[in-house]
Length: 306
Image (tube, helix red, strand yellow):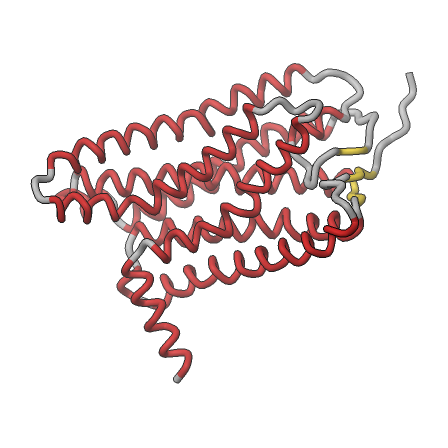
């Protein structure tokens, strides 16, 4: 059976009423600008002040880089989709967007895992923290996070590139894995199995490791006799725990939600949480709950005013 070769993909977006499109456009544009400014500010503060040049803050700068790349990959095209009530993108561009999305999301998974390991060492093994979490190890962990995140992309790249697409309409605001597969002419069970199997080392394993570290952290904190000591120990990891819960909570919710029927709108709204809102809130969580960053931010503002 002959099929017309698909060269363009139509992204339907939210199919929102025309009366709302300008409001949504301005809302997401403002969120995008604030996301860039907030994450860039963290990167600048860590680079500028010696006090913040520690492994924990180096991991945080990488998380900010990851959030900037993620939102820049998704939001500009989302704005185009909103203002036009849908938008076309080349098939190559659609697959490329999915690849970059895969890399940044997977990198964030690994970075959050490395940050939990850093907090585990700082609270559970404080006397050995400096000797174990050296800058060399910190650099190796960061580099490993980015390199490991490329493995799923290189795994799926040959598979997706040979798929023959029959449809060209995606009921989403970006090119995600499941909507792309729905356009295929035939069922691709092998790719779905590969996707499921890759979820073990790249999603499930980090979640289990983070859970283990925080169980150990909570046990250690409970052994601290003074309430002030317990509060100080928990405050050092509360921001990270908040980011972990918001990120993994939304990701798990999206991929546990059925992708057919009426749940499409729910899926798109949930996807907004980790592609737009999480990168926006991450720098806010880390600045508002971190005394070092708040004090140096005030110092930075004073310096800029002079």
